[in-house]
Image (cartoon, rainbow, N blue to C red):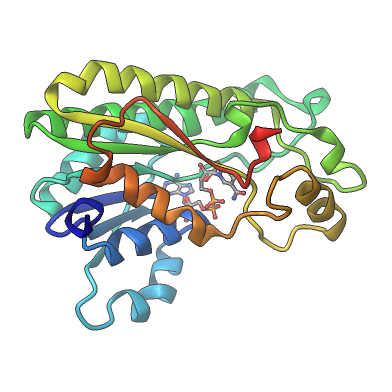
Length: 260
Ligand SMILES: NC(=O)c1ccc[n+]([C@@H]2O[C@H](COP(=O)([O-])OP(=O)(O)OC[C@H]3O[C@@H](n4cnc5c(N)ncnc54)[C@H](O)[C@@H]3O)[C@@H](O)[C@H]2O)c1
C-alpha cells in the first residue's frame, strides 16, 4: 500500500504551484516522494519560499511562465518535459484572472468574460491536452485539474449577503467546462495509459468576512471551510498507482457542500 499511494521516482508539474492551494498540493506531492516543478508567474513568491523549499534534500524547482497564454502551451510543456526528463504527473492549479474579476452579472463586461474564459478555461484545457500528449508518448501518466464546487452546483448566493464578495458567473462556466474537458481527455488518452481526473474543492479558509464564513459553514456537512492542506492528499491519491483504475472522475473535497 505504501508503494501504491507513494510517488517515489515520479516527477510532477504544478501550475500555480505558489498559490494557496497549489503550494499545499506541491508540498504534498513532494512529501509523497515526487520531484516537483512549480510553474508560476510570481517570482517574488518563489524567492520568499525558497529557503523552505530548498531545505536539505527537498526536490523542488521553479519555472517562471505565464500559463494564461494559450500560444505558449507547447513551448512551456516542452520546457517542463526537458527539466523533468519526462514528467509523470501534471496538475493544473493556476488561477489567472482579470483585474475586474469578481463582478456581479449585471456589471459583467463581455470582454472580461471572454478574457477570463481564455485565461482560465482554454489555457487549462490546452495544458491538460498537451501534457497528456507528452505522457501518452511514454504510455503513462496522470493529469489532475483543479475545478470547484461551482463547476457542479450553483453558488448559494445567500452566503455572500452583506459582503462585497460574489462568485462570478464566468467562474461557473469555466469550472463546468474544465470538468467536462477532463472527461474528454480521459477518454481520448485512456488507451495510451494516461488518466485524467478533476478535484473539486469547496471554499478554502482565507480570512474571509466572518458573516460569510458563518453562513458558508452552515451549508457544509462538516460545519467548516477547507484548509488548503486538505487538498494535497486528494491530488496525491489521483496521481498515484492507488488510483490506477480511476479516470474521468471528479473527486469532491468540499466538506459535504454538494451532499446537501
Ligand atoms: N481558494 C478557494 O477557495 C478555491 C475553491 C475552489 C477552487 N479553487 C481553485 O483552486 C485553484 C487555485 O486557487 P487558489 O485559491 O490557490 O488561488 P491563488 O490566487 O492563491 O493562487 C493562484 C496561483 O496561480 C498563479 N498564477 C496566476 N496567474 C498566472 C499565470 N498567468 N501564469 C502562471 N501562474 C499564474 C499565481 O501567481 C498564484 O501563485 C483555482 O483554479 C481556483 O479556482 C479555489
